[in-house]
Image (cartoon, rainbow, N blue to C red; front, side):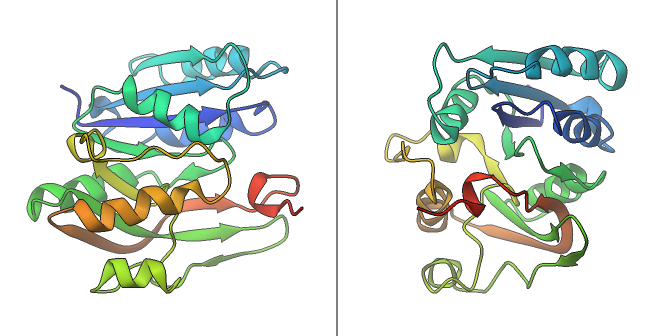
Length: 216
């Protein structure tokens, strides 16, 4: 069994997927990682770029590309990735974001050292003209922190034990807006122990036109 399955939902990601892939393939424990790309019926050349990028940066890394026949949204793309993962732990990475090259290693060390089912880290907010580190993403009462919006509900700054997220009691949301919070609240409820690495190891790209910057 590999240590970590990195799940990357993709939809028309040609403009930024190469940066994302390079950051995963350059992880300091890349030999312990598999990458699961879930293409949500892209209409551009995302899939071709994934194959090209993996041949350049990830020739020794195990990966799979799963293609949805119709667009189903990021929540169901993540669920597809979970169902096809084989790693002991799961890490999510959005296709327009990227990882610090020691993110997997540092979160994995914390998980093993303290027998954690979830490990949280801080992240960096990246805009077209500036960037800044997030506020600390962990408080001792993590569930309360999520409910009071003191902690981010994003999945992408968390290493998660696969057995926890596959438990029968776990609910998989189908909406594609703030579905992360549904996952994160359940993680806070069900995890026996949650660890924290106080470093901004995930780069969160605030991109015009993404789901989280759209309003209705």
